[in-house]
Image 1 (cartoon, helix red, strand yellow):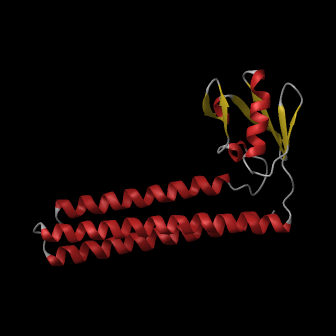
Image 2 (cartoon, helix red, strand yellow; image 1 turned 45 degrees about the vertical axis):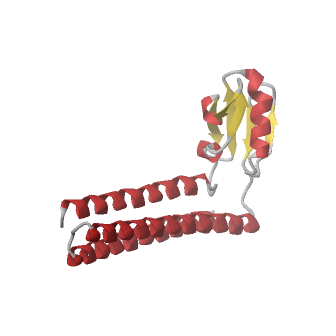
Image 3 (cartoon, helix red, strand yellow; image 1 turned 60 degrees about the vertical axis):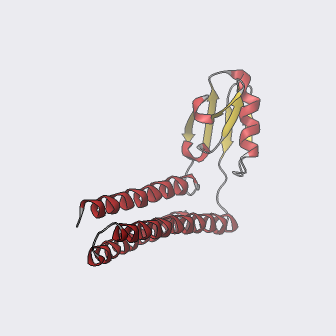
Length: 187
């Protein structure tokens, strides 16, 4: 393979791996088992005139498997944190005792399990779309290389390798989704 083809293939693989990393982060946010501080990763609050992630203005811990405890570094932020959690649509009901905010993580109902599985499937589908977009873009760049003088056979080999990468990463997405569905279903 020419140097340009190899670079394009490596770039494609990096982009596809980035899609997998993003999917893993998104699936991690979908609550499945016990309380986990990562459940609040998407929550941001407005403090000191700017929007900041919750974990940058407080300590988040799990005193037991069903409870999250949020202890802000500045007690003046308690109400802003409580409001941000309520507005995050995570289905949590924070309890503010003036010192710390506690969240009792509810036991999953069958309806909530189906909803979480549906969310996981949606994230997986978005990741597949991303992988396919990277494939399409790389194939187009491969065709552009042909116009720059790379042989037609070389471009065909490149496209086959890109397709192999695509299949590999789509299979990886399916495996991640299967694991998450199992995790959600077996609680």
